[in-house]
Each structure stands twice: as C-alpha cells, then as structure tokens.
Image (cartoon, rainbow, N blue to C red; front, side, top):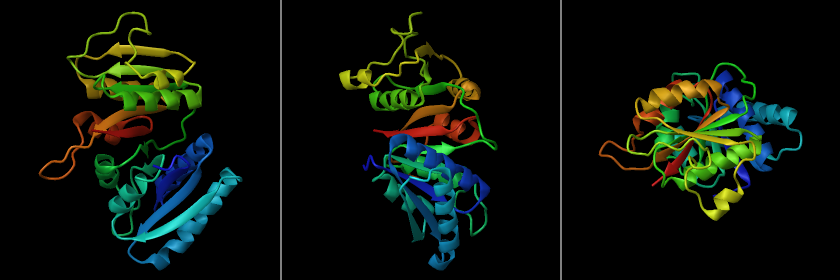
Length: 256
C-alpha cells in the first residue's frame, strides 16, 4: 500500500466528478498525491476527460500532485489493481450507463467486494456540509483494523466518532462511552479522536439502524470480509444496503 497516494476512478459524468472532488479533498487531507484512472474501450477517448479532471483538481487544490492514467478493459479489475497500491480508492455510485459508463452501481458493489485497500464510495446528489460525526458500524470486536480506520478518519476531521455494534451476540456497552469502545492496540489508542466517542449496541435490524444513522453523519465506516464464494466475492447485507442507500459516503475497509 502506498500511503502517499489516493486513487480516483472517473468517467466524465457529474457523479464521478463529484467523487473526484472528494478524492482531491481526501488526498489534500492526507498530504498525498492523487492518481486519476479512466477505463475506456478506446484509449484515444480518455485524453479530454483526464485533462479536464486534472484541471478541475488543480482549481480546487492548486498544490496537489496529480497523475492520470487511461486503462483499456474492466473498470473493476483496473481499480482493484490500483487499490492494492493506494491509501484510499474513491469512486461514485453511478455513471453514464451504456457502453461508455464506468461507475455503474454494480461496479461500486463489485469493487467493494474485491478491493485490496480502503474504498470510499461517494453517495448523495448534493454537497453535504460537515455534520461533525463519523459513524462506525462494528460487526466484530476483532475488527480492530476497521475501528482504527474510523478513529483516524474522525481525528482527521476533528469529528465525533459514533460506534454502532451490529451483531446480536455483542454485549451492550455500559453507559460510559469509554467502556463501549472497541478494544484497540496501544497504537490505535494514540490515534483516538479528541472530539469524543459514543458507542451503543444494535440488537435488531442492523442494516436499517446504520442506514438511519447515516442521515446525521459525514461518513460511515464498515468492514467487508474478503471471502471467496462459488459465484465470486460477496458483500454482506449491511454493506450491500449502505452502498445502495446510505445518506452519506461509505468507507469500506477490507478484512479477512
């Protein structure tokens, strides 16, 4: 993984340009370079879109280092490959459709099931203001990597971290938020956000509970176990629901 690079998948659509803006913001937040990837049947078609993307990024963040890359073939395959060398990969949820579209809804879903590093799926049809909250959907207390990622995101934003535990077998946290936090390593605790942490258990309808909570969040962070199935990698129902309907961007952290 290259901690100094954020990857953005684009196709020229309004949705992908919004995702590009978010990718540029995330790269600037991390003091990282931005790599813009466009997958097309004919590489000659990519130049105008990539040039316009670079111009848009420089207008938003003049000092940000930007590289562009055109790839022939599968968008999912190309972005999965790039995700293995990036601190973050960013895509939208829908694109132009037809033969020319890259970021179809099914692409973001298939990518989330295969991605090799953190994936940010930018949802919503309008620019959200900062709500000051990062939401963590924690399915297993052993998911320390997912929890640590959520803590870092909250710290970078100066935001409050809200933790929802979404498995029936997890014990309900005590009223003290400190007792409700997921167990973390010493390094993880050093990265805890200073704006406060709140934890609670959800014993029924985890997907619905998380979905409702995204209305008040800047970002929701979830884990995605990378388990092989006979029909290929598969997302669990919570991740599938959030990627289809979340009211805020979804950060998917591969686990397992």
